[in-house]
Image 1 (cartoon, rainbow, N blue to C red):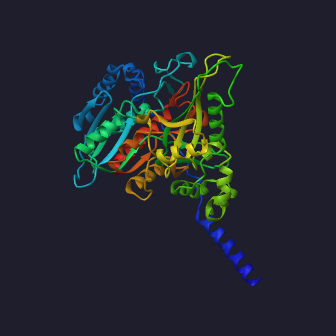
Image 2: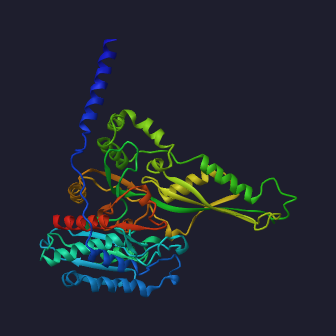
Image 3: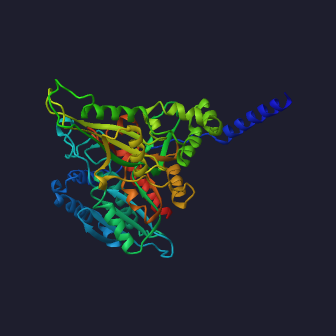
Amino acid sequence: MFYIIIAAAALIITIAANTILAGSVDKNKKYHPVSASDEAVARLAEAIRIPTVSHYDHSLDVTSLFSGFQDYLFDIFPLFHETAERTVLSEYAVIYKWDGSSPDKHPVLLTAHYDVVPADVSKWSRPPFDAVIEDGYLWGRGTLDTKNTLMASLEAAEELCRTGFTPERTVYFAFGGDEEITGALGAKTSAQWFADNGISFDWAWDEGSITADRLMPGMKVKLSLIGTSEKGQVNILLKAESRGGGHAAMPPKHTATGRIARAVTRIEANPFPLRWLKTTRTFFKRMARAGVPAYRVALSNLWLTGGLIKLVMGRNAKSAAMLRTTTAPTIITGSNKENVLADEASAVVNVRILPGDSIKTVVKRIKKVVADDEVSVSVLKEKEATEPAFESSIKSEGYLLLEQMLNEEIEDAVVLPYLATIATDSVNFSACCKNLYRYAPMILNQEELDRIHGVDERISFENYGLAIRCYKNFIKKL
């Protein structure tokens, strides 16, 4: 009994200590937004009016618009272009080199993309490429993803050049024109150029996450999420063939459509296992600082509560995506007539791959789960598939500088490492960068976040002002 009491006391002390060490946020520090200047907003508006929509079929791209966008940058940022060395690799890739005062230090890479996804004009309240300025917002496709970060980084660089500032480290900017369709002609081309020229980086900063405002219940403050890794993605094709098709009045025991339906059902009934990553463990431990007391106790003691938290998170689609490789059947095809059996049926399953898994292990597991020799499992459009990114350090100089900058610019927020569940260009630079960080300087709630790739995308003058200040602050620290 004595030893039980001692063990219980030790447990209570450990939990209390961890909870106290988790700390808390100083709620007296508040974010005071400052809007971007009218001139800066007007320059971003002109960038939005260039409809650089990218397509998987590049013959649909209007490449003159992509090269026109590059020319626009040249025209509106004259001081930066006088200072930096510009290398145009194609309509889809342009690189800048801003020489630092200490050439012995490793250079830094800032990336962004200027292509955008299509927009259905009929659903928008304001035309997506008119760049309407109204009531403190700039409306248009690309205002949040991600002409805003590209333009903000150059606004910051132009301002610093005007003052005669020179960064200590050399800074490279790599801008791509096909990120929305895997970056094969943009970021990958730039990455190859860096490799060919023997250029490597300690770290790179790309888009990919935000400062979240009230996206999670119980959070007292905002969460500035720096993506230290990202999921891979692959589309898996399931296909079954029927021996001769035939009339629906005389169906065989198993039709092609039936086999596909069963395969999809088995995949949904057998999700990938939930699994903690170093990134997600650190995310939740640090998030304890921002939560209500119950959150702080639970999240500060993952050694004890991790299994239960994992089970609870697994029941929510958004949180489960941070802990497992996800499978989502998106397309199913079969017969094109009601009373005719399909000669062939198929389904496409979109898979977002958690670091630690791979395209190869995904295919192997899905084959095992489907367990039907009459259903083939293969990778659809292999060139569009991406492996998950490695987990970048939260102790590197790059991460610590980003953290310091965000603490200075958004004081009522907690900075957290984060697993990005979307694909970015940064993964294309894996071979030449030791660490990759994903963050777009803007504070968004759920309603605003849903506008990315959605209807009525827009950015507030305050968020654009924040982005410019963040890039300026960051570059000055290099």
